[in-house]
Length: 208
Image 1: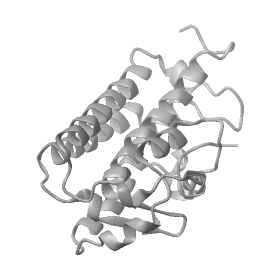
Image 2: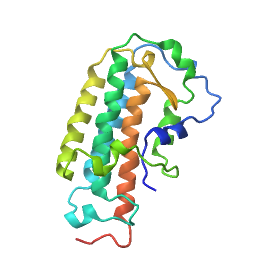
Image 3: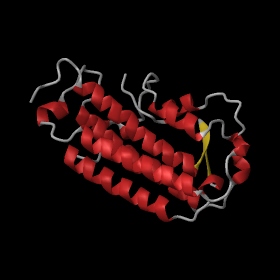
């Protein structure tokens, strides 16, 4: 089964917890939060770029099985998801803060990241984010788009004075504050970087 963090996978994030989400900070980002988000975004960006650095065309296109993604397909998916997930968050920033919705958040930042990165949970992506439907025609094009969108997000986090904790995204499968949503984007790329590494250690992976 093809795997990704999309709406079906997000359902896995609705983990039960005794942690009171109301205890989350409801002021603008702290220095620690801002630094952590930027570091996480930069680290996962580097990991994505390094995961396919120096790979040949044959290596990029190698699929461990007919129903598995190649490294190329993973990169195209990462790039498309990077753009689409953040596009979902932008309109929320333009709406009035809705901190009253925070009581519907059912997981901490740490639980969210762990759930997204956990590849023992598998799910099929939505059609729009299937690699075959990617707007990117090559790995180079996808990586270029990914880097540009990721760098824009890092600049935003570094400079914004928005109260991200009080802007809450309410989806059919769960509720997230925008700070968490940014962590989700970063963790999502990490999830698929792991998938690429799994492809590369396959016994049939081309040597050249």
